[in-house]
Image (cartoon, rainbow, N blue to C red; front, side, top):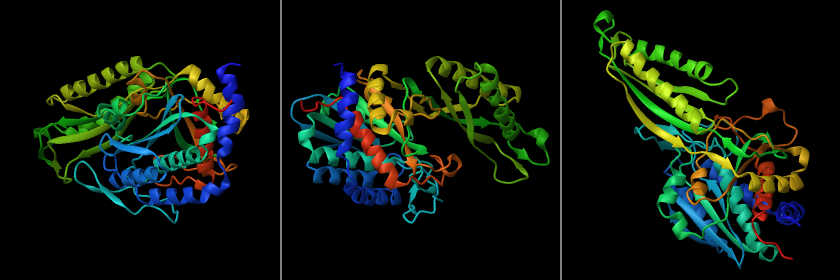
Length: 418
């Protein structure tokens, strides 16, 4: 029997069934706590302490890595080694979900300003699912053999957390896995899963662009080089990168997320600052698009008679590449757990992920998939999406879905009793 056939027939049917409804209430309590107390990227100090303490309670050896990252090593005899990643950080968004355990916490941004903080991307659910899954495996050691490396990664939203853990010696301190697994909650019903092969997420680049002009009195604009007018032309011109520089149908996204300039209506400022977010499907498209964007920024400044702008990289997301063979094995298991009609093999998202650093750093396969946040039967328009102030997964549905998917996928790598 092939490994994939054995996996579909046994791992999905064995490990995923270890989850029981009796485990739900404690997991929901963990989720409520994490959701109410999010922390910004690189500042996940309380979250790391909470996760570390939970792992110790489970008897799992732990160490800190990459600043606020936490690693747990669950050993259960001889057998394969597999890594499972969950991310820790929240977003600078003021929550408006209306749930009783909504976050009222604040955090300090790099520029010193204070913002509301929210788990608007579901990382609190990722942590909850990982801890619950670890607890299931600890309590059912007779059902499997091998080692699971639990990676609780900081700063996914800024694309530096995974690389920081690797640079801090993650794979020198932890057993080297034969694969890295990760999943992400999204605005789907909890009985649905999405997976794909190849690049399943876009590469991501964010830039801060400082347009330099010459200030003047608002009544004497001819004495100025107006960076606001320059910036307005640039924002419009940049929209042509996707429409005119990229092949139709390619999942390229270019967003101007912020535009800051000036202090008073009758003063033309010296500068304007824009932030850009650029998503591209592969390395070739990334090179084409970034070159076009840089060329337009410089050309628009030149056309205005302005000095050359300053371009600063904010973040750079790597590829998120699902290895075909291993992703096929996981998809077969998810079919067995959720039913083939509920497992879509079309995952190709325009968002970005930095989990690829963990696998690519040591040349092992990655498998990444998405599971649903909401009660089955909810209408698509009634499921707020990630990165909005209204994102509110329903934990009583999402947690069991995430744990069952995690257990089934882990079973594709771990040994099972004969």
